[in-house]
Amino acid sequence: MKGKTVIIYLPLKPEMAKLNNLPVRLPILAEDLPLAIDRDKIELEVVLRGLKAHYINEPDDYYGSYLQFYCYEAFKKAIGDNELERSLGFLEDAAKISRDYRYHFYKGLYYRQTGNGELCEIELKRSVEMNPDFYVGFYEIGKLLRSNGDYEEAANYFLQSIEKSEGKFALPFLGIVDTYISSGEYGQAMEIMNSIPRSFSLYSEILLRKGVVLNELQRFGEAEKVFDECIAIENRWQCFYNRSFSRSRQGKLWASLEDLRRAHEISGEVDVLYEEAIAEKNLGLLDEALEHCEEYYFHTGDEKALFLLVRILDMLGRYEKALKYLEKGDYSELKNTVLFHRGLAKGKAIAGLVFDNPITQAAYLSTLADIDKSTISREAGGLVTQGRLDIGSLINHLMKFDIAGMRERTTSFQMGMIPETSRIASLGEAGVYVSILKTLLDLPSRRDLLSYSMAFLISGLGTTTAVFRILLHVLRWRRSGMAFNLELFLDEYLEEIRDLDFQLGLRITKLLEEGPIDIDTIDESGIEDIEGFVLSMLSALEKGTIDQLDTNDENLKEYLKLLV
Image 1 (tube, rainbow, N blue to C red):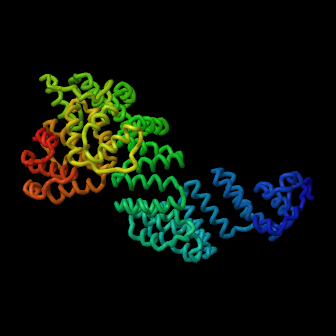
Image 2 (image 1 turned 90 degrees about the horizontal axis):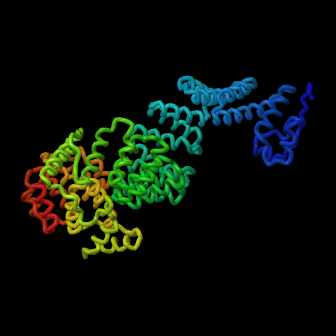
């Protein structure tokens, strides 16, 4: 007792004292005694008050060491809660006992929290100077240097942390991998990750990073397998999210969407909703895409979501709602597009619209000329109901064609089931697509949706969707009256193609790098599949030999005539 302070020394079981780093006779303030008796764990504040009271009354090294430890524990809790002034108070309480390496280490963490990187680095380096074996300090210096972009020095400190801990401290392994990834040294990162055994305590973290690097290296199939392995260890949402990217780049659109849905289910991360909306749009699932895009936009106000929202509403024929989203802000290009499409849905077009995009402007002027000549068509083969592409009618129409594989998928959809397997569409099915596309030539919103929906109905692979999008874009380009130019075409559409099927995007890019295919070569080798058809078509358009390109499918022949 000193003054009015009453201290009671609570005897602790040795195992409990050791587990919690407490003295076997724990000083507790009398008023705190009810908070300490018969408790499995005594609250930090209770322990701290008792140790402080004892040290003030009777300073000694034994209790002083425990008091200093718990001052640092209180500091960590306060800094974690962003209570900066309070955390600094705990730090200075510890300094009254001694300014050891731990004091400088935690002072460095305090400066990091306040945004003072220079003082942070000074204090952290002082801590490892005082204790050269303090591997946690080396790790934190590495983190700081990496955040500053000093990758070479960061890697050096992470390596020192690994050496001084004799490889028992896991975090610097992740630190050095992240450093190499941040600096774009993927080979170095892969070399380290490949050397780490499955017994490593943070192996799922290594697999996550390995998959991300493989995605960056465009080795999407390998990345998918790595994420499979990671998910088998731990259902981490980041693995599902990144595997979704691996799968989408391989054209596995439905599997990619399922991964995004799982990622959002686990994490609740709002950013996943935007990616989910894009994936659903690419499958023609516009109602779901609209719901998720609106939710994302509501939470973030992100402008990119506004553009996607308007595009989805445009394809749904909900022009008034699309225009309402565009009331605020300068979105003249997007607004004019919606006005243009709304007019076409009514069989007319508003004069005087101006578009920055030359293809859109040319298509608009060409359409105005067609309207003046009364050649615009609103016939859609009975596939448009109340201004919207009728998916039920589309399925019924596709069921008329006896094409192996296509009929099975469309039957599944007719029965309300999503097929478990995907398949590449045939040349004949591409012919069916362009035959339907011709009935929607003057309904741009509906033909956009057709390219997504029909590809999902008959195929489910991004390759098919990419081919259908190319066929649509080429026809739109040709109808605009502009001369075809492959480089300009790829500037406009290559990113979209790669997002649906990366390999097809690469094959098309080679046409630009190595030159388009000669018509004689096409005639000799023949056109065997839909990828070969679009590569031959783009080559013929670029070389000016489109009038010589031929195919056995009658619908595709008619399509090619529209391009001459």
